Image 1 (cartoon, rainbow, N blue to C red):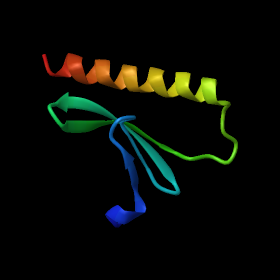
Image 2 (image 1 turned 120 degrees about the vertical axis):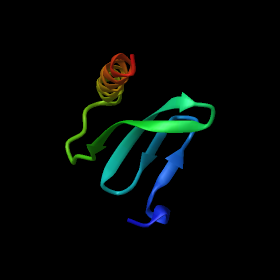
Image 3 (image 1 turned 90 degrees about the vertical axis):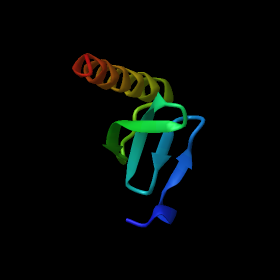
Length: 70
C-alpha cells in the first residue's frame, strides 16, 4: 500500500488509512514500533470506551514485549 494512503500523527502515536488504525509506541529516540493494528469498524464504540480499549491493548502488548527483551 502506498505511503500517501496513510495519515500519520506522531504526537498521538497513530497512523491510519481508510481501513486500519495502527497504534505506535516509542522504542528509542524518534523510533517507533507497532503496539497493535485494528481494522476500522462500522459500529464503533463511544469515544471513552474506544480510548480505554486501545490503551489496554497497547499496554498489554508493550508489557509482553518488554518481558521478552529481558
